[in-house]
Length: 142
Image (cartoon, rainbow, N blue to C red; front, side, top):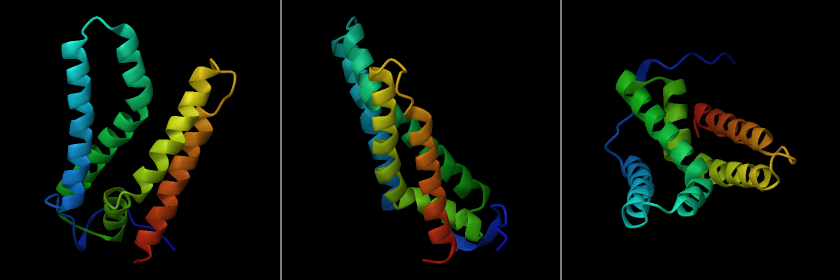
């Protein structure tokens, strides 16, 4: 089976959905938390380090997800199977619910072991693999 690149098709890819709003609200909450931390505790380096350690992976995934979904929807408001599968993989939330904790654990283990335990890259590889598993599921029409 050959997978076409994302492009125009017949599947609507709206941004005005509850799933997209939840994704934006989640990202917004993380930003508000950072702003509150910086406003009420501006000189607390350890607090900022703790926030970034705990939220860094989540922020990266959320920003990437918002940018990818917006790019897909703006490029082709009605997309082909490839566009639809990528769109659904992110907006259903299953991939993020899996990938964020897996990469957070990998990052934390590697960070706390001062790099002696190399778990960050393998956890990212697992998250990418899970993306493609879910992508294949949606591409197949489920």
